[in-house]
Image (cartoon, rainbow, N blue to C red; front, side, top):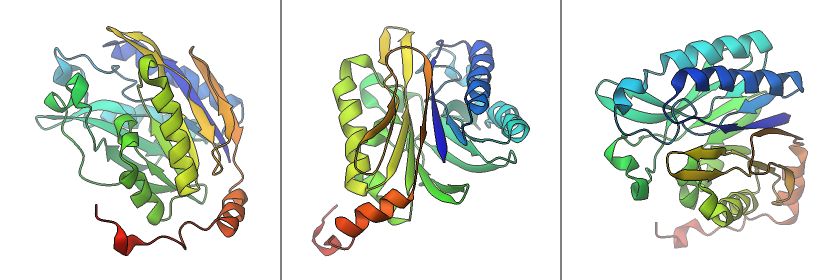
Length: 261
């Protein structure tokens, strides 16, 4: 499976531009032979305009689903459409959508852990379910940005059989050490492939750090972006996972009866 991470310079509050540009990036990645293309967190509005947020958010995610479902079917490519600010009823959510090659929406996920230091919890409603799905026969999971700091969430997905984790984010440059360390750790400790897609550039007062990457289950970097907008691609051979788990079988050696979470 060839995975592409489309590191995008998201413009704060400029939904029309962001939709057009996100589609351009997906088309470029598909032309390069990607089987799966991923976008970053809240690419439709950036992270995140506080004034008038509900009015700018995508009602029921309808535009995201229409545009990227159609695009996935046209290009015959799987799309992990990052996440988008959406509104359902009177509540705003940070929602990810996943589309298969036929354009079907095979998964949606509302961000579980909201980033209180930037007041996300004051504007968004947290999700209440985990997210697993299958793309081209591979069992996948998805978390969003701050979720990365909660290892029990990723472990729960892996215990449900996930071999590949997608992590769309808008992670600031000031904490790049954490971004790179935590993504690599989640891959190593769970013996999975991990594809993360970060934003870049400046939105409001925050500079986002880029460094989107694709890791194998050893934690080795298969592809990594810099700080500017770019698309990275990597081939992932899932037979590697079985080799690793046969040599260091952490799942056989777990002692879940000892863990008090």
